Amino acid sequence: MTGSAALFRPFPLFGTELRNRIAMAPMTRGRIPPSGAPDSLTVDYYTQRASAGLIICEGTCPLPGGECSTGVPAIHGDDHVAGWAAVTRSVHEAGGHIAIQLWHAGRVSSMDWQPDGGAPLGPSAIRAAGARIRDRTGRAREPDMPREATRGEIQGLIDGFAHAALNAVAAGFDGVELHGANGYLLHQFFSDNANQRGDAYGGAPANRIRFAIEVAEAVTAAIGKARVGIRISPLSGYQAAKVSDPDRLYPLLTEELSRIGLAYVHCVEGEPGGARVTDPGDISGFDFVALRRAFDGAWIANNFYDWARAERAVARGNADMVSFGRPFIANPDLVARLRAGKPLAAINPDTLYAPGGLGYTDYPALDDADA
Ligand code: PHB
Image 1 (cartoon, rainbow, N blue to C red):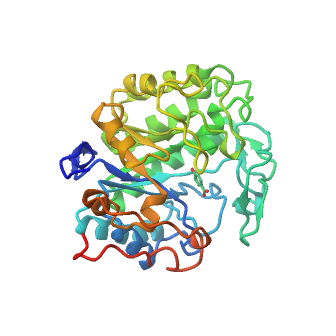
Image 2: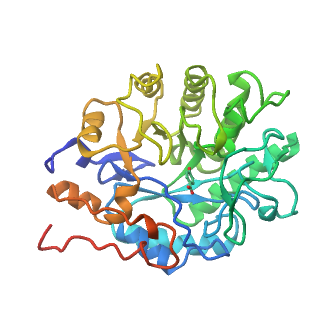
């Protein structure tokens, strides 16, 4: 591994130049105060990791009712914008770039997270059996029975995403990532086991992608297509959502996203925390390489990549960037460690969601002398 490796080459994204092709994947850390506004601890955490070519911050709630856990940030209020502005300023001062992930939990939520105390919104009134959320007291439980979103509510969600994207730009983010993966709202619309609508948003793949396409259109209209990406997980069954026809739905989705001119697709090859799929091209007959080739924008690959696999993917043009999740938790200076061929520290699983800085901002970088 050398400094001239493919992953260390700069990459143009969001109308700027990222200094390398190593992205920090979005990860829920549960440290955000109850207001949803990041504080100085969040500033420290992301600034420590600013040598990533791109930080994609933890899933952030675009509008009230999209939450499904405690300690999660939001971006619908002025206090949220102010909190995130301190984060983006500090990351930029450190020479880094940062995108916000807009995460709406949809049916994977509970009544106590809803502004009206009613059922959470989903594509259909089908419970996410076996999924796990936390209620406002932090207790882990199954989601509540959702309510089928009306056409008016679907439009409200789309408008909420666009408003959140405008707030994100006001907060200084370089770009916005729509969370279309892992069983949450956009993925619920893709999934025929969660979406059994009889209208234009359900049924055939062209209908199941409609909500995501309309969100992408609204967000790109608000902040410009060059600033918008999306995360997808074609094979994931996480949080009880499953697309039964990924080989039909995802090529259609990426084709439409190309038409809109989205800046990037961030693709989870498998499921978060689950086993990674084997080499792209030979997973359950699903062809990730073909999907990548059919998309005109940039491609960020994810899930349990190690250095050699990541380097190979970028060198072969199967990805423009590779995102790393867990390695960034215990190695704030992951890029420097990879560059120097130094060993990586292991995470402490017991402090992943601990309160305060424990297991959050206390993982040390290598000494300058060592690096
Ligand atoms: C999680 O909090 O465990 C989580 C959140 C969003 C994801 C995946 C996992 O996309």
